[in-house]
Length: 336
Image (cartoon, rainbow, N blue to C red; front, side):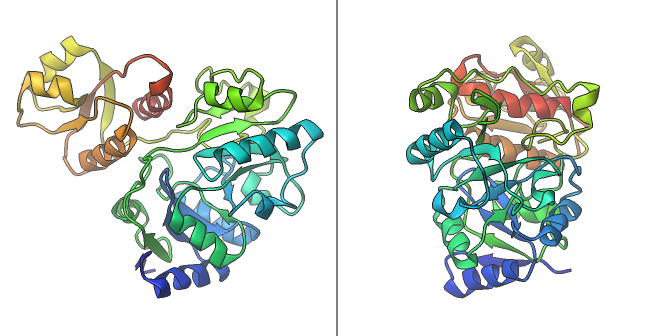
């Protein structure tokens, strides 16, 4: 299969992408977080092709992207408090980098929920994604557009690095501005709970909902019984974000200084890189602030795949809520 690169700024290319999706094909497209691998979200067979193309574990659900809260009608069946909470969240944060998990209806294919009884919904805040959703006229199932376990793609080039020949097309809309995945918030049970940290932190969510939203405790610790059930949301159980053929390891500043003259790759923030000076071995320089960090991190991880180095040392990130989601991504990449 040949993967076409379509240009989002060309109206005919946008319509071609919509036509491919309506025909059950896979098309990667930009969102404000990362590129998503889109399929008709109401077609079990189309969504099944996502799992095949990505090599995605069968118990890992996918997010349904919709053009608005109104477009999600008939996909979820909330209790009164869930309906009120979702309405508040949508008014405050949609379109935006927030995914909300609610009870699903039978209209949602089993493949979308990985056989579970809930659905993860999001309205992306990207003009290309919203235009594509409008043109298709249906929800789009769309996990990140990469082979499972690899770094998330923030550009069309990243998509083609792992999915070229596996999908029909990628709709090139430039670099994703946020550069890392959405916050996933569960409204199941009696209280809201963050399943995956993202750009929206617990303080912002609590302010809108009027109840405490605890920070996630870290990677899901599933009991043997839980392992028999599908995850509630993407990114909770499996290896993620790791570059191919490169092992990542955390170290402190002293460890980076010791490794600096050697041949291992290094990922560190710009202040330390300036202090230690140039080096001949691969170096990924990351921003000092959280803004733009995710995009630079994923770009750097893809660059390491072509550097032919087996080991990369990573500067640990600061504590604090502003770095929580980025620490989560790096910790999962290192664990992988």
